[in-house]
Length: 464
Length: 116
Image (tube, rainbow over all chains, first blue to last red; front, side, top):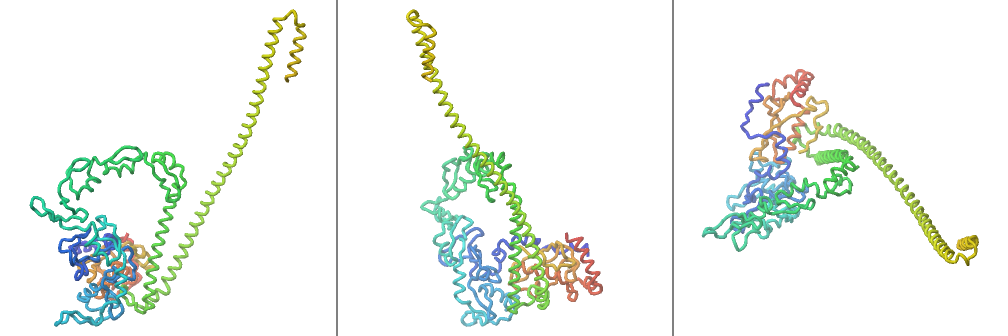
């Protein structure tokens, strides 16, 4: 048993389950692409856009390659998992795309409804008229086509840069008549030869867009078609100035420079959690990173976020499963489709085990969430106390500032007093000088020194 | 693709194992069933030593309305409820019928040895 495991026939191109996950979930249309390959789905479209190489009339468009803005699950065909295209309904009440149900009936599976395996009667092509009639399969109510045709889709040329979004019924009109990115065969002549290259509509003009031009910046040979790509990715002279360090870089390296420029202004990485800081990368690394509370908490926030999204995903999945199970139970249509268990067993399990499991699960999660909530609460409280300490500091500072102002006023008063004293002293000095000169000149006439000094002292007292 | 992690019944001998599967979607998919087999060795009455799986929805009961997701769910359900009365690995099925406790023990051992 051991040795034979490796001898399995591996000639089939096989993928491990992980690979299948990628291709299967990311692009349903690719997964299903090969299936209903008939009536409407033989387009001249390439994987990354839409080309018109034939007559403009009756160009087929692969509606299954469209990318929808939103896909309401109830409008999806159970076979191709895409919104209905030309829906047909069976006698048992299920609806499919016309091509999908026809393919199923023609396949070895036989004429059974893909959902409930009810035998479907239909007449193949009538030998006389070539018209196909179905007894148990008939067009779905027109309103369903209207609803699905009104779904918003992106342009098939989106990979080439078209931003058009509109209802599905307009897509053909848009692609054939308007879309600037639809490619046509270039019908200009170079050297008496039709160019014939596939060219986007926006490049088509009076002259062939494939004629060589010289690049405005570096002089290298380009064409109208390759110019944009050249300027952005190849040209070494197409410079762009960095707002941070004021140096100029070619466009092709600018982006990588922007990621590392030390001078350029950036937001704090914690901005998503509420940090409003902005500054140069240098300052961010040297100062702000060590200060920012949000950054320190960001690890924690991230963990919370992933936990939350995981839980939300799980919840959504469980809910959808539950609703499908409940649906099939209420409709009484639960066969063992997709399960190896019998109906009764599944219902037993549904009614006892899984519900208990869900309950426990929710309770457990709830408790966990509650605990996390408590932790967050204490964190917030701590932050709040920090903030209040800050407030106290602020009050202290204002008190100090008030004191300062008072002291300054007093100082001013003192200065005023001082200047007046200074003036008086000066005045006195002048007086004294004058007296002394007088005294010197009229020593004989003037009374004794005693008198003069007493008179000066009198003056002095008067002045004061 | 997200699949429920706890679909294998608690107490199943395959609980906690990581089983690798190979999935091949033929050109005609979804009009024909995908080809699925186990790459990880597993001791199960409905899975043989080449990893082939005995499951009705992979053969006669295939429907284009089934998806990769639903197939994987069916396989998970099969692991939860081995059916030795419709065996693919005859020896395993015999063991299962004769001494179920012992067979479950072996399955558990295999899970611990290979499905990690």
